[in-house]
Length: 354
Image 1 (cartoon, rainbow, N blue to C red):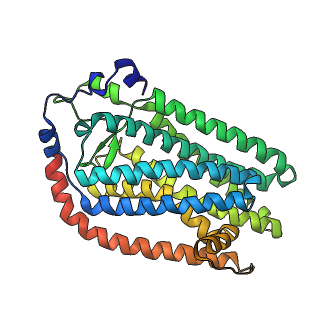
Image 2: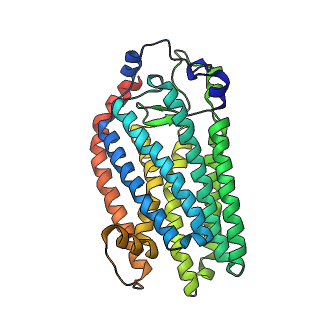
Image 3: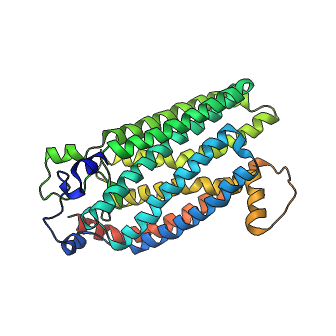
């Protein structure tokens, strides 16, 4: 965004000028994908509406007094903003078959915002994971450690997001690639100067550091499993930790896929998987909270459906297996559906790229 402030307009920024072709000519270079755009809009709207009662319940039940829930609330707001980018903005752009030069100013600003939300989500997710590990490992000092870490994490995440929004190159949406990519593809002839202008090193470092941190934290947790598997308090901690693991999963997959794009020429299905993981990544926490968190699940039923039930200490393992099984079945069905779509769309995407 600092470049936009410096030059005044997007098209005045070097290598972002789109004047060599008309709007109609740029529109012809895109690929309209209504079959993906409309489902993203529906999914995004559903997730946004789902987060509202969840945040309300966390405050109503005073879960917010716990340090980890302070981070969860911040992550929820970040996920709502990120869902707006990954679904409610990306969806219409897919329907229109948009490329950067069709709506340069909007795409430039939206790309910077999407990048900032992604990096903030990564930082907050690592903080949430680290918070749970420290809480389990040093439960005698949990109150002191968790609160300080939570406030530090929140301040750091917001500052980090502001830096990525203001001082790093944007990412530009392209319907052909089904992705937000650094290159606006506005230049007729690629050049090293242009490539250097588009390159976003902080984003690449963000993804690698995030994946590395997740690997280290998982390794530490695996070494702690035997010790934390005893006692009722440890079981409660394990239940929260399982939720953290699932929240982190899609974030890690998305980071790996987008970093892999720097080294390999992506097939259509890889691009599609990256878009889906990015969208699901910011939506799955809301689904986890209402299915795996007993307090939020109970209050959600009461608030939304008017169902009042007494708390029953059902086995957490059974609830987890039902959730995982449903996710696996739905994912398997979707894989079978989009396999057919990919066969028909892959040739079109290849022709559009060429």
